[in-house]
Length: 77
Image (tube, rainbow, N blue to C red; front, side):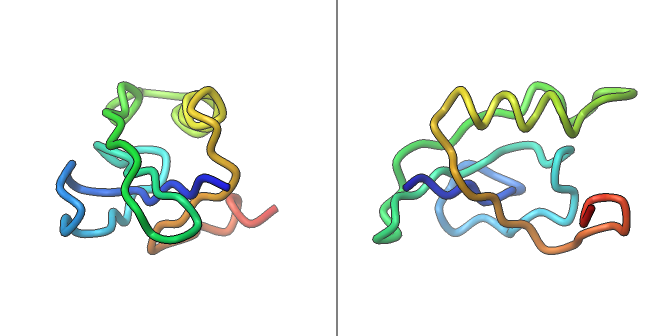
């Protein structure tokens, strides 16, 4: 299992991002909490469609779960 955390930076101690699909980075951890990689999010400043594009990016990295600090109503459907 790979878990992505939306992050404000690449460092494992960086703040969790409030921006979900528009987070500047995703940190990818294994199920034991080991950092596997930090991925730059090229869609963080996308005008439209950041959510599906970021999801596809994470799928390409084998991510099975995502976490960030704030869900908007349309993201819970």
